[in-house]
Length: 443
RNA sequence: GUGGUUUUAGCUCAGUUGGCAGAGCAUCGGAUUGUGGUUCCGAGUGUCGUGGGUUCGAGCCCCACAUUCCACCCCA
Image (cartoon, rainbow, N blue to C red):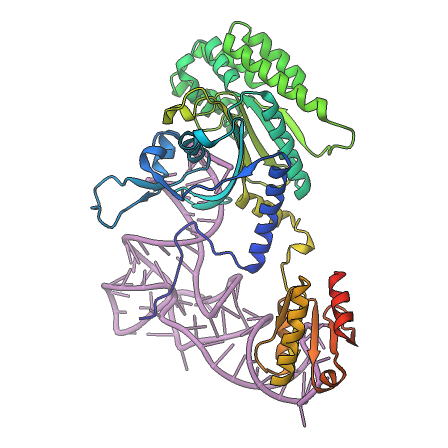
């Protein structure tokens, strides 16, 4: 019985053109990662449920894909699940391989992750993250370099972005000074929505979540913070001067900004905006220091990159005292942004340089020998496999965006040449193997 | 998990109060027995998302499920 094939909700097929573009994204990100000395690892698609559970908050647990073993009954708790992000598997990896790693350890990882979320704009159930993390150091140089890497990546893509910067210690300090230390999660998730729902609704939500009227009032100056990063820091420092944790956060942020500014030159791109944003919270509750988020300025889309510092993620797996910091580029959202802004360079069309189109079996064999010679020079070459009509063969070259057709008939075989046709201009000339190789190598 | 939306030819989509299933593009063939992308002529294609129900009769009305997209929650 023929049934209509389909793929699971929130997943996608990638066709050749899309893959060329995706590879352009991965290659660009990867080259920046390597520029800063990061090395690649991969981890399995599935992890033990015990590794995943409880790392992403209540909501996160619900969004985990569970893997049902064939032997398990429907009601049993599955022991394996698909990874939800790359950071937690990385922490697990570090703990398991600690004896073989040199710290500080810089790694990058480009792999798909899965979330059983409801799909919508820029949200898929299977998507790629490009993670870059360094563990085993709490140096703020790392935060600074991550910021510079974000700047470099988006500069290469030509996407104008704003990078928002916050610090969990500052958020903790705020909760402390308004006397609601234990409500830090409620406070952060509420003020995270400031942009979207406005100050009045945020305050309403804070009251609903059980904050006192007084605490909400004391929060207001923080919410309304304006001015340059330096001015913001000044105001935050004044507000938090009674909180040791809060002041630590202020110092960290000040140092990161200072280091960042110290490396900037006039040549740096001004399209990149780095701003302190106290309303930036980020849901993952393992963050303890800096937190980052990047949004495209010219496209309506959720964050396209995010990350932060986590002081004790490996502690959960029995290896305390290892601080890490990292960020994750959302490849699929970047793809959507590049598509919407039409920013793909022309060369992202990965294709064949030359197609041999032939008039018969003898010509085809002749073409195969020529093709081998070209391939030895590293030129992407195809021989049309059937003895079809020339029209058909030329259409094939055209439809696949192949730049040159090398036509082989009796005349060409006699003179030991091919008729080389430029598919864009329509110009053609009879050329020797040497001339053909030269022409194609120059491309 | 909540609310709405979409699904008809390979693709994008029309389809009237319930009455014979349509267009453009793409594909294939020909005009052109050694030349594609432009032109002209011709042709093919459908379990109308799936399963039930109402009706003399359902692409259209009702129910369930799947799916698309959007918003909320949350997030890359």
